[in-house]
Length: 81
Picture 1 (cartoon, one colour):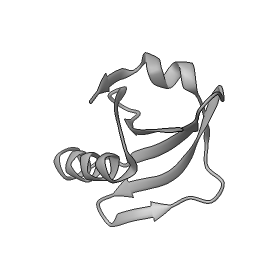
Picture 2 (cartoon, rainbow, N blue to C red):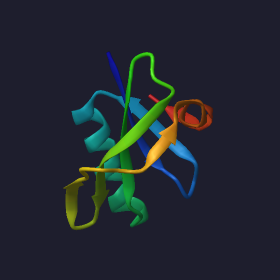
Picture 3 (spheres, rainbow, N blue to C red):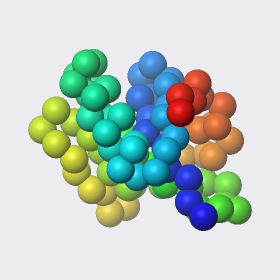
Picture 4 (cartoon, helix red, strand yellow):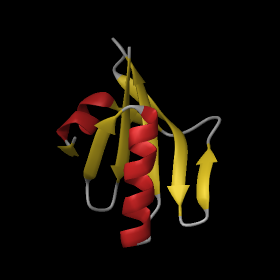
């Protein structure tokens, strides 16, 4: 099972949902703030997640080899569901 996070790293706010739900939240957040939002995927049982996409005002960009995030740090963020 995978957990998907949409992360606004500047305000330290995250949203967890399925992939389409995180994309919708990230697009709305980008429209209101103008900041890029990272989409991070964490697989079950692993301690790290990887950035798989980035949402900006120009659209969604898939990332092949993204930034590695510590799962505990992601769970520590103020998570909105």
